[in-house]
Image 1 (cartoon, each protein chain N blue to C red):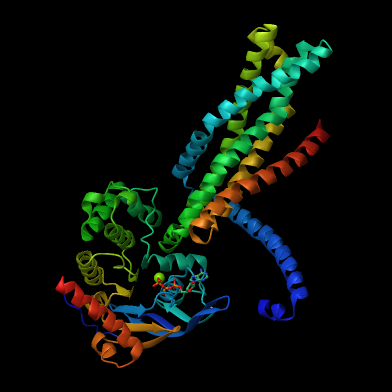
Image 2 (image 1 turned 180 degrees about the vertical axis):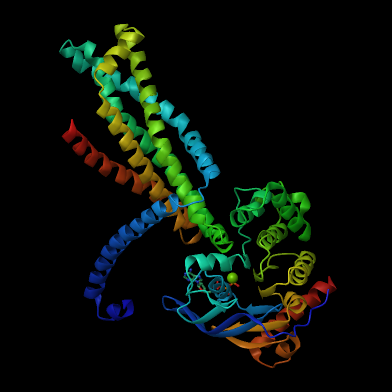
Length: 262
Length: 269
Ligand SMILES: Nc1ncnc2c1ncn2[C@@H]1O[C@H](COP(=O)(O)OP(=O)(O)OP(=O)(O)O)[C@@H](O)[C@H]1O
Ligand SMILES: [Mg+2]
């Protein structure tokens, strides 16, 4: 699958001078980023640099200390509870830990957001929707399994399916490929691209995995010390001589060589 | 503010610690009040999660039934056995059924059942919600535009508040069976005779106050368990703490409520 070209200018996420700290710890310190409609942006950054915090702010799970966070034209921290609910139906959040409901089967996991948000659906339509997203993530056979019986990669994909079932306009992926083998990574990367094309989503993909960023993203942003060091397409960003950028590239590069040698 | 105070020496630091724990205490009371108000607001707003409420009622019953049966029965036997000598001293053995009934229905059944429920159901709520919190399952519900408070908290508190009166009446009955067994062995009283003298001593306000207590204790256990779990922090350690605090807090509150309710009910008697 190929990266799709983005030629429109419609903003779905717009963040200006966002700051967030926990106690004395300044995590985000002046974040500026715009996400265009249909675009995938990969965010790279060291562990603890505040990537998860950033997308939690975008989805309204955390409140920013200051700055502007506009999602689909609405300021997430200023809208009412009702408006936030409505906005969240358009945002899919794939958690770093998958966060499947472990007391429920795969079917119940997928059913949970659907029947509560789309009460007009009858049983047949609900079943069809469940089967269709499971088919999209390629895990139809797991429908009656419990999350504890799934592998890490399967959990990630069910987590993505659970957000797709509401047909989101924006997808936020928190480290979709971490802890997975290279082949499963490729599957997840392809799934992210498929979601972008089939569901017409705009996405933010948090990752440490440059291959993932290269394949899935139209733009790459590097988060360092609470700010974006650079934002641009993959080539632009990694042709830079900045030591911090190079460190990321070299690590992945060396690892890739080792993998191919084996 | 914290760092400023720390710089000015040991003395202020100690004062700061004391004022911090007072802050925490009142902050805690404030947070629990907000939690309870939210419960009532969301419990009475549509749509109601009936299916999950029924499931939770079943869980509460299933978790505590065996233990309350055993404890109720044994308490009935032991209490009767231990009370006999003091009544015998006055030759008042025939009063045994009424004495035991009053003790079981007014005091023992509500206390035993709620303490067991605090240990079994309350800790379970704390642990279950706590682990859902720390594994981001509650966040996941929130971002998928569903209401985790309604699905997890409202259903659990409602279920235990509804189930406690049933459980307490059940424990009372089981306890009286234990008492009857012991009375029957020693005084060879007939079952009907036992029942007749047992119920002669019980008035409506006894049953009513037991049910009222049960409802309060059930609500207390539910709020303590869910509050601790819903706001659990710091990974697995936080889950353990939530389960533990759920039990400690609900037992503590149950004893305080018991004292208050007994005073009030005796005023009506
Ligand atoms: N709820 C919170 N309360 C206090 N501190 C927090 C909270 N959430 C995050 N932090 C702190 O914010 C910093 C950034 O955390 P975050 O989870 O965003 O890192 P990350 O970039 O996603 O790292 P990783 O790649 O390991 O997932 C960390 O130092 C963390 O301790
Ligand atoms: Mg993270």
